[in-house]
Length: 207
Image (cartoon, rainbow, N blue to C red; front, side, top):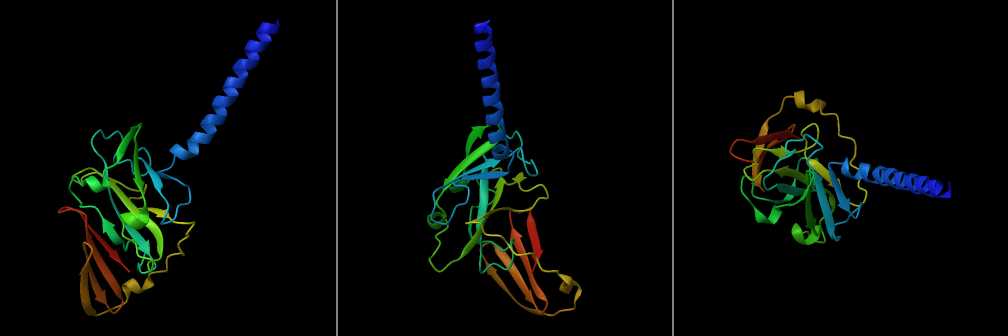
């Protein structure tokens, strides 16, 4: 009887341990990206894990190499689509942004933001933006609504987007600027930004 009790007690302890482990791991692997440390800053050594089973799942069960395209959302950014310090050559097998496969749709990359993006002390970084991709860029891992994936730094919380009622207002062309793989057309009512991902993909946003 004592042996049966010990066996049952040991079995229940094992079940309890497995349940606790599963409860701990579930929120980690159910996220689109996770980082160590959890709340990183620009000077931290960050281990980033991308979960291709989450978000828009464009890279779910993809067996080839996975790369990413990335940039910074800074105090100088017009909004969360206005990337600065862009890194990655879209549509190519860029070794600088190649991820390490971990299995089970997980991919890892280690990064130190200040050196990786060449961030000066005068730059205030709010978020790091990512788009994960195949080498040719035909498949792109984004959020469930196909937006860029944003990693806040040191708990940064973006302000609520402004109501863009001014989009319907008449305006006039002022000038344009070209920088960091994007064309910005400046008008009296706002800026129209064209950002190229590949010869077949063009993102257009209004600020």
